[in-house]
Amino acid sequence: MKNKLFLRLTTFLFAAQLFLSIPLFAQPQTFNVRKEDSHIGFAIYKWKVFKEEGRFKNFTGAIVYDPKNPAASQVEFTVQANSIDSRNSDRDGALRSKEFFNVAQYPTLGFKSRQVEKKGADTLLVTGDLTMRGVTKPITIPVKLLGVNRVGDMGLLAGFESTFVINREDFDIARGWDIIGKEATVHLMIGAGSSGRQASR
Image (tube, rainbow, N blue to C red; front, top):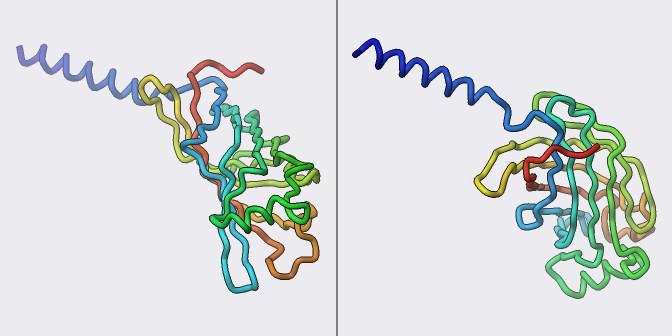
């Protein structure tokens, strides 16, 4: 009896270990950005004293992540410029004006990757084209994979985070304005979900 119990327990532990060693997914998956679980924020200095923060509230995006070949991963984002929120309605109006994002003429901001390089255990260097105010510039941003988990009916969920700096004048935003700093820090917290179906190529 004891031998049978021991055999069953050993078999169970072996099966559990085997299950845990299997990755959540082995093929490329398309993760669609979940707006309710994501944040696109920015910070910039004013008068070289105050650090002003803001965010964009409306955006869509898709991330094709290949765990076996991270270099084959892809990223694409579209942000609605009019959704800018700096917690001040007058300032938001100024940011939507021709001097800044000129949302009437350029309603969206966008990013599309061209190359992905693995760096370390959980970081990807994503190089692509960033477009703001009608100006497109190449940029490389570090993206940290926070984790991947299968959660009930929601399927596969993945978390990503990135912080990088851009020069606003590179995109003709408020060129010549000395009241605010030229460099803006962008912080992305991205939650995305997949049905678990293999991404199409």
